[in-house]
Length: 270
Image (cartoon, helix red, strand yellow):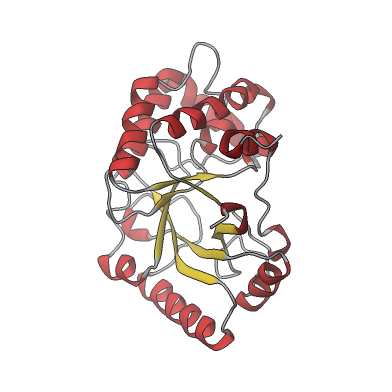
């Protein structure tokens, strides 16, 4: 299947950051219009069981279970002309995604894991932070050191890359693109990257290609963006499977998959 006709990272308005127009009906209609062949609904799952609350809107286990069931029933009723997978975007914490009840994982047709927090803190990486929040992030970086935070971040990726309940890793290294962590002196250690990629291959976990990463970089992290494609090239060399994910939160952004650098990486298209 042409992965340019896939989008395996879409949110409905059930997710706290989803646009009100992001109903399953509208998502299907937009996907049909764009000729999609396969999509995935990956709803945010933040849970108090993780014991690392940061003020984000929590989703109780029963609420997500009910929602997944309703999505599957609605899909059966609408009969879309393409494949839809129903699942979650699991927030990665210090214990990976082990805090998520097995019943929820069993109800998912797809489980995507994503990092959203600075390792060991309740602080979310977020390019939309205001001056005060950026000050907090910079203080954490100053106290811990860039190299250690990068290493701690990669260790979390290594942890989830061994979990066979996970199907895919969403917006990889996005949090580093949002930060001031990476520069010429603080690149991602290649040995950790290789271990991460080899685990993904062994456990059949796919890595997301998300072109939006070029749009969220802060001025301080442009060096990271220049090296991002090299990180992806290394993943390809290690035999990692890729998939496209737009991280769509409203229907009109579904299928926004193409990016010159990624096109060249995958198929040599320029």
